[in-house]
Image 1 (cartoon, one colour):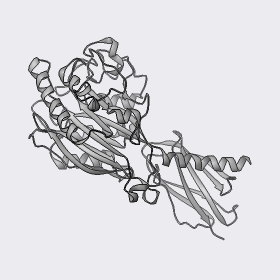
Image 2 (spheres, one colour; image 1 turned 45 degrees about the vertical axis):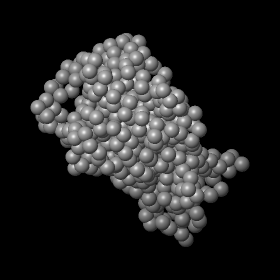
Image 3 (cartoon, one colour; image 1 turned 180 degrees about the vertical axis):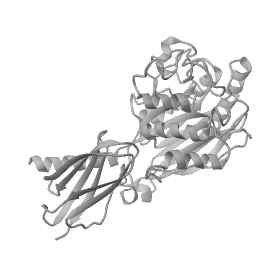
Image 4 (tube, one colour; image 1 turned 180 degrees about the horizontal axis):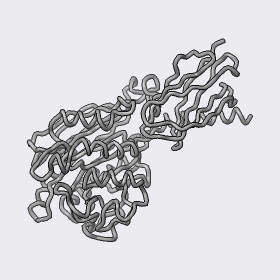
Length: 427
């Protein structure tokens, strides 16, 4: 009975994962990524150096939806980010949206996504004053797509006008009004995320009020952490400040330390309530790397208490903003025919196998691994622990002691990620 329960537990966990998937959403201002100006140059904002730091951050967060501000309008640069920071170490499933730049800005928005889970249906430019505000309509690659049913997530990505004077605030509000009027025409009852670098200093600012207190009640966006207030240079909001990661400037990054909440992911009430198969996961919203001990200080000094020194350094060097992240629960079943969950991209060669099992898999970083082999009745036959390196790994184990038949191989890392493969042992 104990072995049967173990077997059932293994597959119940897999079934629940498929039936109620979680999407990790991340938004990040990349600080003139791939753009050379008189102040942000190849010396103080080199894209190759930024890629090293960005890979470190992305390896830790592992977003399914990744939206950005301040990336070059050059598609070559946008593809470079995808191929050199996302589709690395065996990953090849991240795709991107099409660049939009009707405003003719040197810095634009972009969306990247895990194409195993999500597909991009369409995209729009909601407004083009100062900079484009982009709208990306994603749908979940659900098993019931053949029946015409799935879950949609609409990402509105904005980089509102920077500046602290009255004219700047007024411009931000013009942009916000334009976007809300567009959304009112197209998305009155959808799962919508309004995200980006809003450059607002207070929840009382007109632009923020337009977004969160819009005349049409059904269109009002919600702050997942309910932290409205006067954020600028206010110790009371130290735990949610997103800018600046630096106390001194290298000529490109802003200085002054962490004292502003510029970066947001706001949610529609459909996402808050889960009324359309997508729900915000309570307490999942965070300014990544923010431990509340950064007020007017950098992200690395004093020592960061919520991320490693390596990640804190990457955040410090990559941008003067922190990324913001949250989780979404999707009450849909992923299309298993094409998208069985494969966190390690593991494969057995050959399969069927005879005396020796050869397993290939990929890791984004070194990890302690455990490989378990069960009978189909759930009886554990082999358990081995080992350390694997970043990148492609090859592991072998002897199967001579096992009789011919069908077995289940479970590969588990130290964070609890699981991949299960079927093993056929020949005579």
